[in-house]
Amino acid sequence: MGNTFGNIFKITTFGESHGEAVGGVVDGMPAGIDIDIDFIQAELNRRRPGQSALTTSRKEADKVELLSGVFEGKSTGCPIGFVVRNTNQHSNDYDNMRYLFRPSHADYTYMKKYGVRDHRGGGRSSARITIARCVAGALAKLALRQLGIDIKAYTSQVGPICLERDYRKYDLTLTETNDVRCPDPLVAEQMAALIKEVKAEGNTIGGVITCVIKGCPAGLGEPEFGKLHAALGYAMLSINAVKGFEYGDGFDMAAMKGTQVNDIFMPDSKEAGQEVPNLHTKTNHSGGIQGGISNGEDISFRVAFKPVATLLMEQQTVDIHGQATTLTARGRHDPCVLPRAVPVVESMAAITILDYYLLNKSSKI
Image 1 (tube, helix red, strand yellow):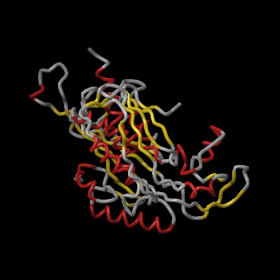
Image 2 (cartoon, rainbow, N blue to C red; image 1 turned 180 degrees about the vertical axis):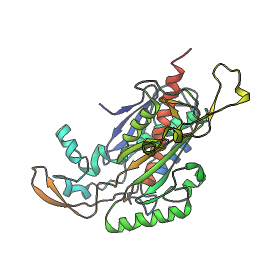
Image 3 (cartoon, helix red, strand yellow; image 1 turned 30 degrees about the vertical axis):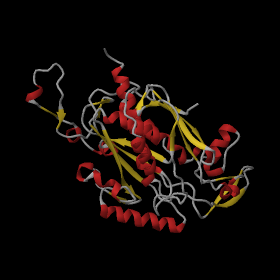
């Protein structure tokens, strides 16, 4: 239960942080898509641990193996099975957590739900499981590329250090030029310094990732319970450590008047006379979605991440018998998930958009 995401384009994942491997099965991939294995591996490399001083020191190659669904470089339309082997587990680092519940972690809730838990690296609750999402997201991106749909996410806030909300003020091609994945190099340096500071303390810090989807056609999304923004929110809130989602101007709209946020349609003489013309709006406060359906403008949203729950300092907690005790965590952990979460946000957005594109194709003749 709860290990599959999607309607037509689906991903089912498996694996634990310190198990043999993490993997999945992608079903619903359209046939005939060029499968660029180097691109898929590059997407995984953006997520992998140990890539900079700002992330966990765990060293994993995260080499993906495609097991099915691809023939002579193209998707066959059959399920694409894949696996990524775990090769650098330090399970002994977690021995002191076997009988304790880490504050704000999934230890207690997993125990209450299943009556058993894998304490090594968090088991199934580990962010390492997002490997499968990145593989599926890379496959979705390859299909969306043929449709002219482009998805870019970036770190827009770390702790109190933040960019302006308007993504159009930044060159998003600069996102991958620094370890924080922030498109403003000067702000990126400040963010990196803050992450290093909290890491030295044994502490962690949260932040915000902004995502922009360009080229999405109008008409994606269902009018009632399958609204596109609800699907994107569901996708984002399923990512480890995510605590909030907003699209367009989001919560800022609560303090505004209608005259400030209505997106006015612009006349287009080239489209005049068409039964349903392709219109554009003067502003985009709605974030590219109106009435739960894409309107053809850029889709933009923000995702809030909490600080990582595992701290490398002493904390008060209880053991599995409910007795008060203290815990000083060991092991290799991210002081801030933002840099490695950027490709995960992109992947979940790509999976959702491709799924809803295919749903829209099936809704009319």
